[in-house]
Length: 108
Image 1 (spheres, rainbow, N blue to C red):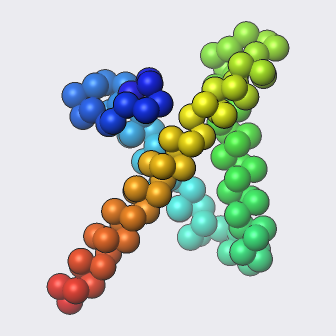
Image 2 (image 1 turned 180 degrees about the horizontal axis):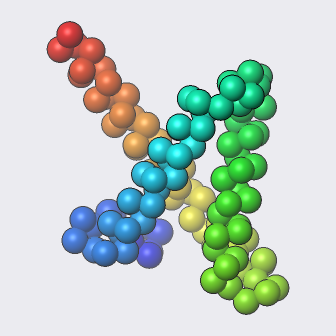
């Protein structure tokens, strides 16, 4: 799925590795949000800022490890390129998760 517009392919090693990494990051963030007492005391807007800042710094830090110094503009361009797709996928995942939760609640 290296092409930002291509659909997920469960037989593509890139797609599978990327999805597994996304899930691992989401689980780590969710665990932190559920278990960190100081995070839980933050106002909602500060919670959003905290997650945004932490994940952006992590993204830049992790990807910069593979790039030559001075590649900030290239990385910024890549983030801009993939951002619309990230929103699309996140909305799909959220909608699917909400649908699954609603279905589970209807069973009970």
